[in-house]
Image 1 (cartoon, rainbow, N blue to C red):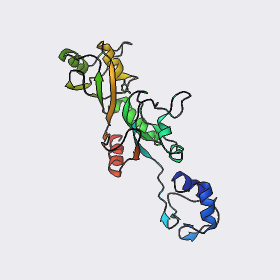
Image 2 (tube, protein in one colour):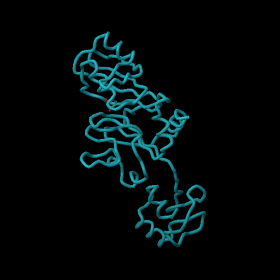
Image 3 (cartoon, rainbow, N blue to C red):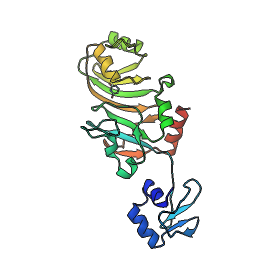
Image 4 (tube, rainbow, N blue to C red):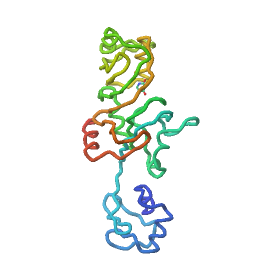
Length: 235
Ligand code: URA
């Protein structure tokens, strides 16, 4: 990989800054001062240092985002803003995509990554990765309706959902746990009970939970512990 590309994808420096730093002798590769920004480097093996700091290269990125209302879970959309637009452009340009979808008006935990194999595994139906959602419904839910929810419901297209857990805080709100991810699943499960979702927020995805201190619209990289737990969940 070219040195200037490496510094750009690691958000260390733009190409212009790299050119300037090369001229000023501020970049070394394996201890040797670099003379060209287009030098070929091996990010896995070479030690690149920019203004005295070692540049850490990660092939895969794992971003935890607190999705706000109105954003779509896509990399591009002609009409609505996408979750990718909440990230700095140099990070978004690293091939990140949402791992699973949330509806435009659903809030909360969203994982973005450029690790296609991991995303594919986490989303594979047979893996049954659990997702928890805080919800509010328009009408009160009865015990009998909750029992139907837990047993699995038949949706309007004839699909029979897997059993899903529901724990109420009061008659109209609580936490739902799904182990599958069909299109508009919770919305359609509530509709099968002649009810409607008025609020939906994902609070966990597999081993990841939405941090209390991550503001709506904010993001951060997974911690090494979270990353390990996620990789383990996909094994
Ligand atoms: N179920 C829904 O209906 N919408 C979501 O965004 C997620 C699950």
